Length: 355
Image (cartoon, rainbow, N blue to C red):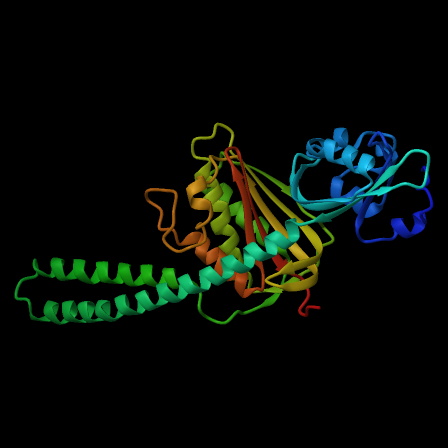
């Protein structure tokens, strides 16, 4: 590895900040491990290669890099979007600092990833909005359930006074429809009882979901990519089962018109992950992916609110229940969606404490 002029390479290698050193032709002459991870490129394959060819997005700033070399002035770019080798995108701030201690000037590139902080801000705003929405729904549900109880009671009293058996059919319809509305209101409120946590193998739970999904739709191809090192975790297994089942069923419904429907379950461990402003040492990530029609753009921002559904016959209560259950477990739900590729990610802290 070529040394950086007048800089202690060991210091740069041990920094948590992503650091890349470029020569006067913008070829990489040094890259530390955080930069390798962030940019998804290895030092062995990237040294001597033009940065703009390895990471799509930097090409738009080539003129800025050369201007910094010519002027000797540093430059900072905010909110730059980079496309990585995997095809994923990341948002970063970066600073270019010229280093003029050699015949040829060099550039020191410091890169600060923003996706994590943007996600934390977005998640915090989403949780705040959902709390307000849930309070409104609960207030509305309370106002609905009170008269429903009166309607049902009146129908029962009326049924006792009716002289004809044929007329009882009408009161029975009133009672049944009142009960149906009451159940709908209860579903709007979501699970309100305290959690009943017990040590659970998340893969056994996913297997239960997979078996039921196959029973309901034998045409779907389910693939599994589990991390066997994941330990048991303390969760309310029945509530979590229902939440994951809701996600799987939504995925199946989105693939109704797909010739070869495919569903994928995967699990991984995320290290030093922040949820709702709290940083956890180890977090379980559950992914449920499908190749269905995707989520319409106009629904994405409000997907977890009650009564929001992309299907004409949908109640819009499945995903709010998922969000409520995961939130009760101190977790969060995220998703990416485009036609042919939708992935929901559930993050649950593994430890019972946080830093």
